[in-house]
Image (cartoon, rainbow, N blue to C red; front, side, top):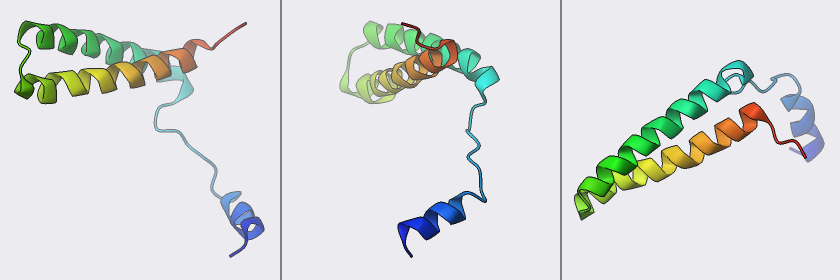
Length: 77
């Protein structure tokens, strides 16, 4: 299958994002809020177990929350 055929086949199925544009800010803000809570809990007990159960999810939540919030509010120069 050539790239042109793949391009034509993809035009029949439009992209639908998992989180709509109208709810990106609330999803991003909630992810950031949960990340702050997880970070605080991780700061109370810094062990290897809490690193795996709180530290790693907190960093992922912060990353995705920041991206969703930036996409929701836009970047204006």
